[in-house]
Image (cartoon, rainbow, N blue to C red; front, side, top):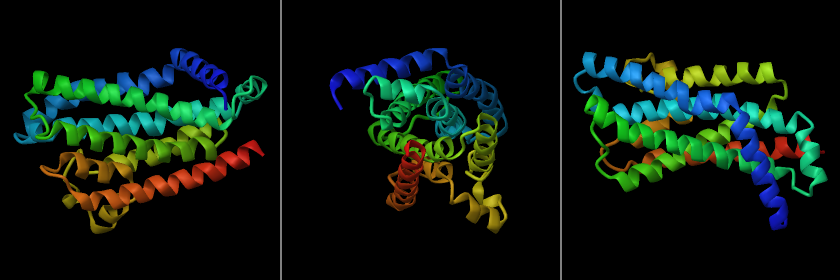
Length: 239
């Protein structure tokens, strides 16, 4: 792959992002509105909610932006003539997957930084004790969430069905993760089911007062499994 092809792919992805209402809504508008509404409710009803407000709102925003925002972009590339445009200009077709993930990662990281800055100012939320570690863990969580979203985007070619599958993964991710209420209150089968979603492990990783190494293997396992499945789905799509 030469630099010309790479920059052409980057430019094309930038143009797609500019016109994407889905990206704006799922990566910024809805997460920030949810934060503005629920942040006030949480801190008013639960005295200790400010201790983990940044983490819980970040998990919600990243999960929504990844699972609902990324798959339509992949369907737009690999389920339309954009794939032919890539090929005609010498851009490797796998670059579409890479660039959409990089773009979504940057948007979700920016949104998370906005929450990080706004939560203490608006609701008196407590900042994580180790910012460097927090943002490193955040980057890992975003990457894992995007890997799962990539499987949905590559595995389901129809736009309507993609949205349905995204919601079917998003809702239990949020409800079972522990960000809305303690996971200990869930029935045991649901608590076990929640362990299959990155949001559960991401929240544990971000909200812990100190680094929790036991949360890394599940996240890495989900990331590697989703990455391998995305590779197979992409290969099938391009054949």
